[in-house]
Length: 214
Image (cartoon, rainbow, N blue to C red; front, side):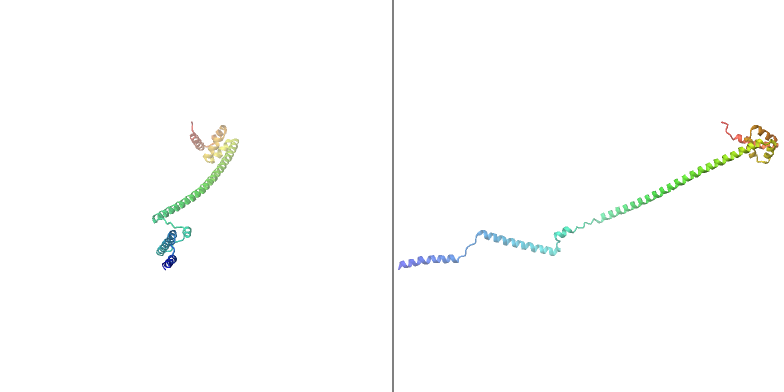
């Protein structure tokens, strides 16, 4: 009887141990638990970061995308004082440009006027030369005429020439007598009246007095 109980006990014990092992769950490895916990923590951190970013974006407004930020140039407005100074410089530059343009126009006008004056002066010089030539020709012609007339008087009888010189202006008569040869002039002077001879002699003396002696 005791042997049967012992055999039963021996048979029951293994079955209890087996059932206990079957009921007890298997423990996962420690490395797997660490990896799983790390993923959970990282997921929580990411959710917190995304939530904070959305909250900041809602407060500050929509954030521009990087492409839009790169494509849209940021305006860099200069300060008010600098803008005023730049406007002053620009206005001064424009004023200087206008003054330079006016100076160039005046210089061009002066150049045109100078050319016109030079042309007029050249015309006046040519006209003066022509007038001088005409006067010289007239004087030469008059001198030739007087010389020919003087030679005519020299060939005439002295008393006839004296009668003409009595009626002639003393200046003209003195001019002819001055051109005549001394012999013909003496005959004419001898045929003149004393008053006419005196007047013509005064005119001749006055002409010679004006001639420089040195």
